[in-house]
Length: 334
Image 1: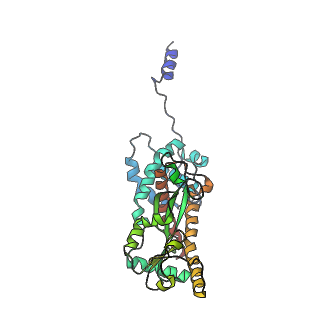
Image 2 (image 1 turned 180 degrees about the vertical axis):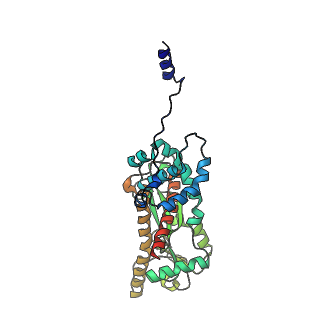
Image 3 (image 1 turned 135 degrees about the vertical axis):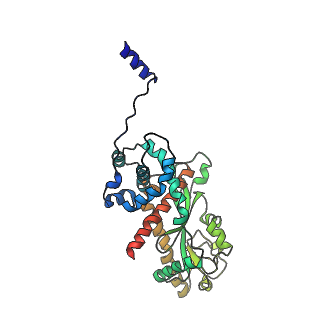
């Protein structure tokens, strides 16, 4: 009878069953090659990242069996790198999908908090000098400090203002502004606008756009592509005195933003378009590299099944991590 009473108590929840904790492998003990393929970063960088995020992640829980900081970081990076919660990673880490969902927000916030050091637009003359030299050496364009474009990150249909997230290709997305330098480092990332938002609107309302429009940089340009409705002056007359930002067809021609000729007539205009195309194609390759490293952003892996706000956090965290990895690549080439 006592055994029957005990079973009844368990069935009715009066006695809690003992939780079983799966064995957790030390993923950082694996070879660098394996770590790079799964998490996109070397062991040394992963250890530094865990050390940076450790205090905040340890304070965020009071559980007796808290997930170790390295596992929180690595499982989050594993998801960002692949776009899925892989069975191999689950088996080796001992972490379930619900646990990943619980720890990932704090890891993302910690990574984003370091973005002011990792993602930095070159406003000062000293910061711009190196950017200009690189673009001039690689593409023959004077005074260029960056190339600009937007890219769409696919999301599931949100519950609020769903129509505003449908982009021109008819899927729901966040439209993300990217500015990069000649080393394919991200110098500006804006992830906050729904997919239907025009590229030029995002630039106009970004901190970079507002500061450039206000004259914060008087000897530098961005490279973009052509928006005929907003062309007001001869681009060839404006090349020498300014620093350049390069952009594509979503952007207006401005004294700090160069776009190509829509219908070039002279040899000079055609040569300008050729140089502009080579230089501005850099941002397309950078976006491809960015999404290729962090496959959760690539729609070929499926849309992100999170709220728009959470997706924006994911994009920003991936941008920080992209620069961490890309700086390592740049250092290897030196």
